[in-house]
Image (cartoon, rainbow, N blue to C red; front, side):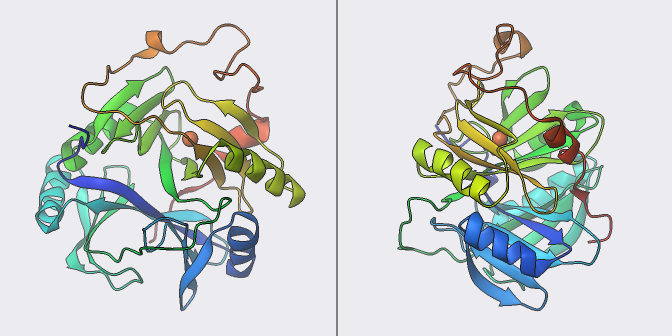
Length: 302
Ligand SMILES: [Fe+2]
C-alpha cells in the first residue's frame, strides 16, 4: 500500500507572486529550464517534462514576493468536499468554495487554509499532458515544498487531519510528511517563523542536479547549499536563492516508500560531528540561505 493519503494524490504546483514577471520568466525558462504553457493577464504558467499541466505559476504583484497557494491534486471529486469539511474541523477554514477552476489547467478546485493562513488549493480533473519531449536538464515535477512553522505540531496535525498526510520522519528541525510513495511531498521546518523554506524540483537524475548547479553558476547564482545527499528522503540536492529571494532546490532520487516505512525520530537522524549530508562533502548552508528562508511568506491579501 503505497498511497498514504485517501484524499490527496500528489503535490502538483505552487503559485507565487513576484514583483517582476519579465525577469521571472527569463530566469525560470532560460536558467531553471521550465517552459511557459499558458499566459494570462499578469501571470504565466510553467511546466516541466512531466504530465502536470504546470508546476509553477507566477503572478505579477508590485513590491511583493509571496506565496499565493500550494496546489495538491485530490484523489477524486468527493475528496474536495471531504477536505473542505475536515479543514474546518481541524481549525482551518475554506477560502474558496468548490467551483470550476478558472485558471489554465482547469479542473474543479477548493482552497482551504490552516490556522496560520497557509493556503492549499485542492484540484481534481485538471489537465494532464502526455508525451512532452524529454529534456535531460528539465525538472520533471515538483518534488516537495517545505514550509517553516512556528508550531510544527499544530501544522502537522492540520496536514494529517485535513489532508490525510502521514509523517515519514521527524528530525530535530523538520517534520517530513507524505501523501504518496514519495518520502515527503510537504515538509515542515521547526523554526520561529512561517516563511517559505524552499521549493524542490525533481530532476531526472543526479547528473541533472549537478549540471543544474553549473548552469546556475554560469547565470550568476552560486550554490547556496550542496551538492549533498540528505538523510531523510535520501535525495541528492543543490540549493539556490532565486531572483526574488525564494529558495529553490534541484533534487533527484527521492526515496520511494510505502506504509511499512519505519517512522524515524530525532534520535534516528543525527549526523556525526562536522557532517551535514550523507556524502560528507557539503558545508553548512550559506548564511544568505538561512536569511532567504525567512523572507517569503504566504501573501496576506491573496
Ligand atoms: Fe528539499
